[in-house]
Image (tube, rainbow, N blue to C red; front, side):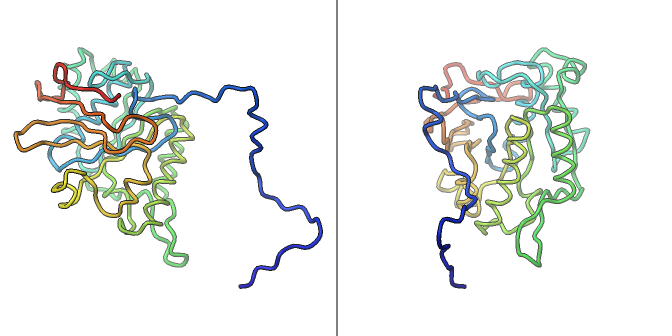
Amino acid sequence: MKVVPLTGREPVEFDVINPSIWHGKEPPRREWMVEGLFLKGTVAMLSGDGGLGKSLIMQQLCSSAAIGRDWLGLDVVNGPALMVACEDDQDEMWRRQDRINMDLMSSMNEMGEGGLMLKPRVGQDNDLCMLNRQTWKIIPTPLYQRLFNFCTYEGVKFVVIDTATATFAGNQNDERQVTTFIALLRQLAVAIQGVVIITKHPSLTGRANGTGESGSVTWNNSVRTRVYLRRDGDGNVSLKTMKSNYGSVDGNIALRWSSGVFVKEEGGGKWY
């Protein structure tokens, strides 16, 4: 279709920003949900091999947020946190929470009063988006709308979606579909003025080359932060920053297993 330019001085609606409105003003500071790592209003990703502990370390983060404690030595904004667990049942989350409570010297009542919310959904339909085969575009599902409404109503600040594979019903190698899915999650992050974190398994290539990437590179490009939970050839476990639009890309925290949870090794690095 040929585009015909307008003639004369007809007004055209196209909102822009004139930088003069910023004259003499200080730009707003970035607000971190997790110190130097996860930024307010963004989508982040935790990638890692299956069985290494992605779900555990995310449940630890949600617990720390609920009661206002640090997470792996990093300051965390205190606020309600929701973990949507697509691969775990209630009993597994209960056992995990019991160990986390002992590490944080907290109780189930304290966690509940602080706003920790756990949603086990193993064996259920967890699609947050679907492909409309008439328009060939990704659209939100009723489950996404329920999640969005719940989080905005309850004032949730941290949303963990475990996993991307269980909730994304499109083609993970299709750039437009992946971008649209992340954009839906970004809408949620902005609406709650918090952070949405998705977990994902790396591909065989991603494990082999140490990047932790999976599927289209759009997954890595679309999120603002991606961290990789990995184990090296000597069995050492660490959490490494693989991408950060606003923080350090050299972050690496050495971890060790202690009484059923991950803890930071003494002198085990930092994010910035």
